[in-house]
Image 1 (cartoon, helix red, strand yellow):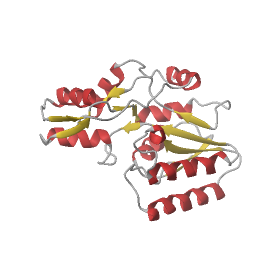
Image 2 (cartoon, rainbow, N blue to C red):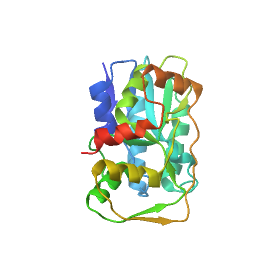
Image 3 (cartoon, rainbow, N blue to C red):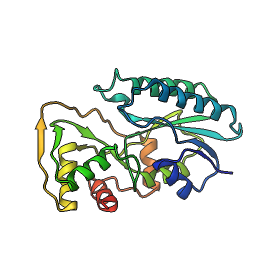
Length: 228
C-alpha cells in the first residue's frame, strides 16, 4: 500500500502519478526558505519521528530536503540548519533516502514559491527586484514521480535531483514575461551567485529513462505548461 505523508504540491503529484509501492514518503513539513519559527521546525521533527516510528521496515523511506543548502546566502539561516538536522537524522535510519530538490514548479502550490511569485507579480504589472547574478534550478513536479518510479536498490543515501542546466533569474523572468505577454519592470541590483552544480551520473541516468528534456528548452516547456 502506498504511503505518502503530506497534502502539498509534491504530495498531491506523487499520489496521482507514483506507480511504485516500494517506498514510504514524507512530503510534508517546512518548505518556505524564509521560515524562522521554531514551532514550525519542531512540528516537522515531531512528524518525522512519528513517520519513522510507524514505518514498514520492509520498505525504503524518502524525505525531501532542499538543494538550497548550498546557497551561501542561506547558509546561516534557521531553515537550512533545520533541513541539515533532518538530513543527519535520516542518514542514521536504515533504508532511507533523502532527495534534495531545487525550485519545484507545478499547478497551484505555495504562492510564495519563486515561480508562483513571479507569475503573480508579472500578471499584476508590478516591479520585480532581482540580483543580477542570481541563478536558480527548476524541476517539474511531475518529473519527481517518474524519478522515484525508476529508482533501484543502488541509490545513495542522498540524491541531488537537479536539472543539468540552471538559469539566471533575470532570464527566467524575461521568458515568463514573453509567455504571459506582459512587460513589467525589472530592477536589477548587485549580488547573487551560481551555486548550482550538475546532477550525478546516477541521477542523469534516471532522468534519461524518464525522457526528461535535459536541454535549455526544459524551462520553456515548464513555463508554457504552468503559466495559467
